[in-house]
Image (tube, rainbow, N blue to C red; front, side):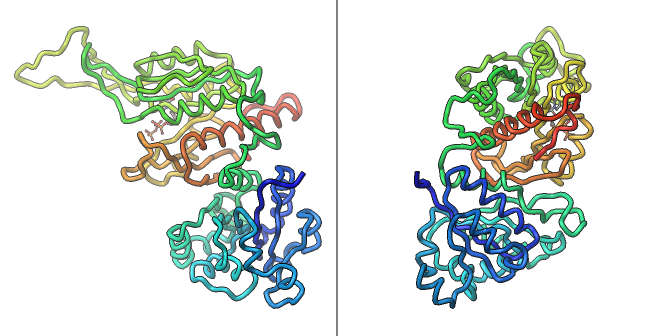
Amino acid sequence: MAASKRVLLIISGGIAAYKCLELIRRLTDADIAVRCIMTKAAERFVTPLSVGALSRDTVYSDLFSLKDESEMGHIRLSREADLVVVAPATADIIAKMAAGLADDLATTTLVATDKPVLIAPAMNVAMWKHPATQRNIAQLREDGIALIGPETGELADGEYGTGRMSEPDAILQAIESRLGGPKVIGRDRFVGPGTALKGRRAIVTAGPTHEAIDPVRFIANRSSGKQGYAIAAALALAGAETILVTGPTDLAAPDGVTVVPVESARDMLAASTDSLPADIAICVAAVADWRVENETGAKLKKGATPPELKLIPNPDILAILAASRTRPALVIGFAAETERVVENAAEKRVRKGCDWMVANDVSPGTGTFGGDRNQVHLITADGAESWPSMSKTEVAEWLVARIVRTLGRKEDSTPGHGPTQIAGS
Ligand code: CTP
């Protein structure tokens, strides 16, 4: 059967080029046709022979080759795909793209294309941080080019930092989401109600909490609950028995989810621990860190002097679930940060004892709180990975896809593996 979607993969010359072989395999497995262009430098890292064998197509590289150009001119190459992907995208090709240079087949095709372009940057940390690269990236974003990664972690050259190319799975997910095709869970299609998580039980906390001052007043926050509800819906769609412990929101109960409405952090904790044992716990709620110690049973009267509220700490639901005797195999937190997003969230992951932390920037202007889109970083024991900006529903689908793959792998692995040993990506 002919593949329904086509990707033009441009491989530029970086050490991460070897990961493209796996990416090509994943794409063809997912029934996406791949045609490849390699730069001259890329050919020093992987051979056109391997790329051609895996993509089952001619590999193009030379703008001035009579053979390449007569077989498939660069204009046709650029037009006969649904999406153009540059992976790895080195600092060099990024600079050329930002400047609109067209000095070889890869860059000429990129200037000629009328199709959406996705790039997966890969380079040394200093090159990534260089003002010229950051300027070029800003330019590419402005030109409507989508990015996946780069990730933070150990780089090929032994240094630690941001610059590692995203893993083939993550790039595949980004490609599929841009092609608008079926979602992928591991190698299985996720085409609607599924069974990938059948037999698994999941607890999700969502929304704000309300901490009472008196019977009519409370302290709350701006969480809408949208991300947590989307995750509960995606878990249920994948077949998990899903319990959504939610603070007050305006949202409708997702299909197939058991909703447990609560008000305060203490109610949320009780409802969550009552729902144990579970295989998966995802704490998305914006739990109030403090509650009012001197909550009154009667409405406070407006006296001559305003009342003084003494705040005391609330229990940390995520940390308690992660430390519980019946700890779920996968405990996931969400970190709302306004600065040093990845670093703070990575530190929080360790402090709260969870397996993964999904970090997002909730600074004013990002529109995350209450909005429909989210740009998150998935932090695991292996490092951090940045996901493209997408809808909260897509974030939920990506997360559930990753959960399915991880729990599947855990089952395949040797018995006795503790939850903290779950490989993150
Ligand atoms: N969380 C929780 N119970 C709390 C506080 C937070 O379960 N009492 C969970 C949230 O649901 C989220 C994660 O912990 O999954 C991180 O929440 P966040 O507000 O970012 O962290 P805090 O611990 O409140 O840290 P800080 O406000 O200092 O950034």
